Image (cartoon, rainbow over all chains, first blue to last red; front, top):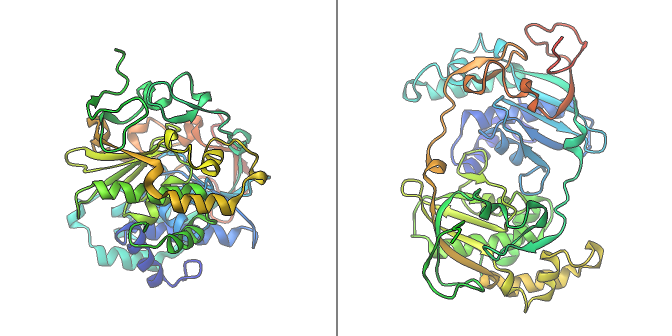
Length: 211
Length: 211
């Protein structure tokens, strides 16, 4: 069974090159994309929702024109092994999910998916063999209608300079940017060779300091 | 100025192929990755944080081994045009941001970045010319230390079957999955050719229905 325009082996090679290794999740993701496209009108332009950040977004980015950066792939982390493709004007689409009831005949896939064995006890060659044989058969398909609020284009609105970090940010986020509202994942930043407008020294600058 | 191992033109071709078109943001993102790597120890393995979902994640995915699906690129939407690469064991890294104070000599870049003109009035060839000439010079670099909570590996824990949708989900999310906790972006789903264990018909099924 092919995965879009690729043979199984060609797809696995692409996964290795993009994802870093032939992760079982990205392989399954390839079959999920294939199954979705079998149910979508030919030649249409679709956007994607991915219900997990694990592996599946890379299958979508490898096989379709939807990427995180072009805004046509949105990861909504629901913890489910599922993805949906939809027509953004009507919101009508196809959702594909890995169906647990279909894993009974594929013990190595089931064991991997439900984390029933430690990683080192998994038999990777058998897992890959089962994935190739199972193809799209372990997945199910549903028609979906995307909620209106999700389809609405989010406009950034006016861009301002944050009085705290001096970087550009969407004014709609508040008087200071979200990074300076304690949402940045940094403990501290230290200016190096390129100074900010108001920070000419190389001294440590603690973000969100109220001093 | 090269962008990692590519000439400007080669990189622009890669952007077109992955992102769909040569978006100015992905082009700038390429220079941001280049600048970050000029300040990172050679040969190290780094994870990435991207502070916007617009364009920049695609530059990171094109030029580094960090992707959304392999978990080495995290988008933390702070609305800032910035990215950071860090060593995940120590949390030490380099943050690069587009510095608004450096845009004064590049009117077309400034006008695009601050959305000062409607899209159709933008001069795309001049914008691309200025981006190529400006290279990394419109960006600034900082050392960052990633917050500990961000570095901790999030384990999914036990996987269960959601009693509502019958799909697998992380039990830590609650008694039912997040999708059935009203977080799914769908108005409705309709079972098609592949039935769920408990839904053999093709009748409409409204998610989260409390009936």
